[in-house]
Image (cartoon, rainbow, N blue to C red; front, side):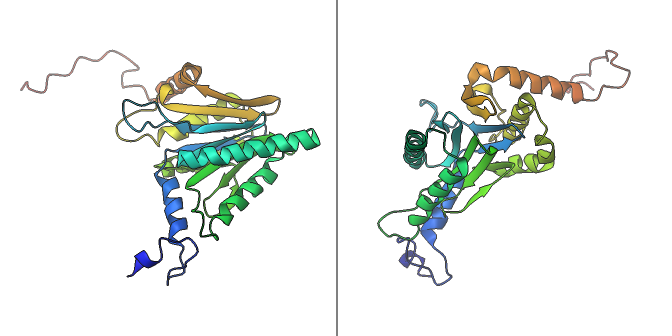
Length: 263
């Protein structure tokens, strides 16, 4: 009741103790295209579904490079993500100019979370409607962080955000204990398998419909798209075919089944 009196201003609490504007921003993340990240002991992989507004347009960019050792995958409002990515790049450049080294991911994510939080207590700005997965490899090793419009941030071994991300989370929760010792190729395959559950409708995961990025020890941040991902897709398909049980008769050819219209 009287909800409209409270959901137009981010600094006014509802009688239930809720900030509706912040909840709307978090809902924008849930409605965005799925993105996920996972890390091993040496590398971090980001993957995101590319989603076009309509059939005649190109898909929006979902992964942004911040520095040679860092990048982000986003879910939510792309315009907000570009603004925040520009801020993060500037911070990385300033740190490198002053100290002569790359910025630690934890410090940058803390500054980013503070930016998110400031918009939740000032009426002149709305919350950023975007969630970010920050992948980095710095002096302390590989890291994967998630930031929320509310100002919270967390570090994960694996995480998925966006629409239909629960299926990807289920896969990641089932296999995350194996990620630590995975080589890079296996880590990429896990990312693609988890992302396949986020595809909407009857469609299947396609190399042209996703973006993948890798960063790690002795490897600068690199994005892969299209034909660069096809070898991984083929390898996953071969593994799936090999895992299928053989038919009875040890693979002997069976007689064709009768047509459905025949008696």
